Length: 187
Image 1 (cartoon, rainbow, N blue to C red):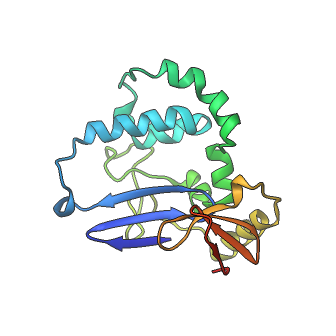
Image 2: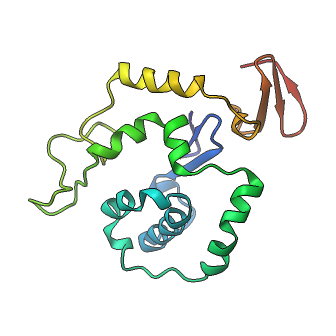
């Protein structure tokens, strides 16, 4: 789901609870240091995307030399927290939520890579995207989406955000409960 308000695009994927705010420079309340953003991406990737770090470092080569600080306590508790909270890893997210991103792993390119570099984009970028020149065929996307819907889900996997960005839990197709315990008709 993509929502736009006050110069901010909020993108969330239903049932994942994952989101990211994109602000264009004219709507930022402060200057953004790109290296700080990349550093924070690296912190996230080193924990959540452990099995996919090669993709991350191909797209953010400047992060390779960045030294993370204060991560030892986080890493020490990560697996415990992951189990306690029922967190899913990036592999689960790609298989069950973002099928397009999963497919794109093999066609990633970097438009700012030097000429002749293996990651240099060959061809025109997909409009609105900067890391791919191809998109997943519709039939393949639908096949992956159907396969994901057929997998059993836990209660944690049935959490999502409603259009007003409230957390909701779907216990069955006829019952949606918001974080404030409000019962809603299915959307």
